[in-house]
Image (cartoon, rainbow over all chains, first blue to last red):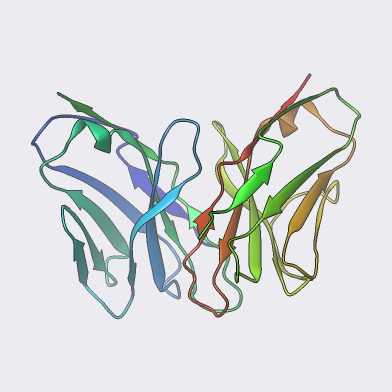
Length: 113
Length: 113
C-alpha cells in the first residue's frame, strides 16, 4: 500500500518568514495530493491540492510543488502569520471512485509574533 | 452552505460498551468517509459510503461498522469498546462525482475508560 512520509514534525518560524513542509510517497500510481490545516479542536481543512498533471500550484501565500519522478511534494507558505500556526497534513491517493487517502503524520507549525 | 456536522462532539464510554457516532454531510454531497485520528497512528481511513453502499474499507477490525441513509447522513458504530479506541473520529464528505476534494467535520472525541 501507499506510504507517506512527512517532515519536519515540528517547524518553528518567526512571523514573516517562509515555511516549507515536505512529503514523500511510495506509490507511483498516486495522482492526487491534498494539504490540510488542522487547528486545535477542529477538523482538517483543505487548503490546497495538486494533481499529478501539474507541477506547481499557488494560492496567495500558499504554494504546492510536485516532483513525480522523485515522488515528493512540498507545501510552501510565505510571509507567515501567527494565525498560520496549526498542524498541517499532506496526503496521497489515486483519484477516482476508490479514493482512499494515506496521510502523513503531520507537521506542527508555530509562527512566533 | 452548512458544513459537515458531527454529533456528539464529546463522548465518554467504558470498556465493553458500544457507541454510535453520527455525521451529516454538506447538502448535496453523496460520499461520506470516516477517519480515526490518534497521536500514535495519525489519521487513518475507516470506510467510505456512497449512495448507501460501502465503497471502500480501511484496515480496521469488524467491531467498526457504518451505514449511510438515503439522505446521505451516516453513522458509525464501534462495538465492544477497547481503551485503544479512544480517538478523534472524523467524518468527511465529498461532492457528487470523483473530485476527491473532501470536507471534514469537527470530529467526535471518544474517550474509553
